[in-house]
Image 1 (cartoon, each protein chain N blue to C red):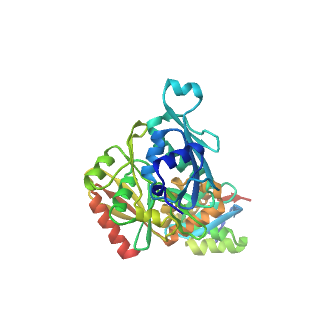
Image 2: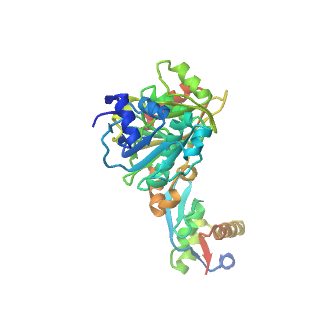
Image 3: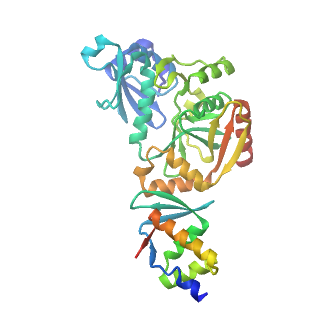
Length: 304
Length: 93
């Protein structure tokens, strides 16, 4: 299958407008349509290396990012996320359309992909050691995932850990959502990194997306074995602290970060119990990304 | 021993539909009826397991396993049973 970058801007624009674009992100194939040029442009930049087709075909999810009802287009340029024709969210500014797409896709997978146990967690891998970075928003999870992905770790996901019935981490590498100060931090540390267009004044402040490394996208169908569960927390000026977390406490904390644990019932419990039994859990408090990365690489070497 | 045996002589059983999994701190318990997940320490886990057995065996197992032959332990036992009852993992019968 060709990647999105193999097509011209004109071909992609036409396919997106006609609803003929299919984008493969890991195990999911999306039908993506939109009439917003800024969204189509961001999509080309952030998903350049993903398998794509401009001739239609089967898909898992039908996503449309377009302005709402006719009259509102003239009042303010807005974008609305549609999944199979339904609009579960309020409209956002058209300039935020690509951020809306990412949030909407997270919601879609979290709401419908129940063949996986889904945890709110970044997932990275080094030397075969699948590592969950499980934390709520504001903990620095995405910044740490971005840093690791720019330092040779494989990125499996910035936001969702997908755990299949064989207890494998199923990749869904997508752009890493960086917020506010993290954007400048990553730009300063990695001047070579090219971020997508910033979405300013969203409900989370300014958002910019770091494309997933091409090497991670190329391995987006290759599962990983979970070996480490990290509960990261960035605290300004704090000395690095690494503390083991018991498997029972780890399970309870992961349940708090789960999208669909209550839906899966016994199956979810058993999968979660297997996960905490097979992977070591640690709490990592840090202020320095370098120290955090070194510590994680040491853990991989010792326990991976 | 005979006196201390009579005190926790409550008719209890483990709630139906509990799935137990060992963990570092004791046992993770999933209640299929409610979907609730609880974490019990090792002592709580012993009690819950004992209550799943035949009742006379359960009483003896509770005593032996938890070393409940002292009054102070007996009080701790009552607290433990109460907390299990409150969690819904153990029910009066």
